[in-house]
Length: 94
Image (cartoon, rainbow, N blue to C red; front, side):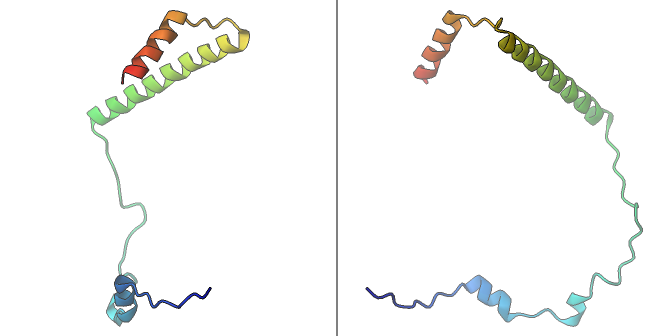
């Protein structure tokens, strides 16, 4: 069995390799004066409220998760057989 060499070229790569930036392109970022800490962001009251609500939801989920985990570990978590059967039926109907 023999494998022949195949000449594969990537037009996009070949094009990029063929062009070299000129001196003004290479050094364009060196002459800019940017002061540190000059950027700032201010959130609107609506964005702050959304952030507060998202954190409240996360805390609520964490509390519920902890309660379920404790019940599972202690062996007191009860699952309704009817609920499980209904979920299986619903999943098979999709």
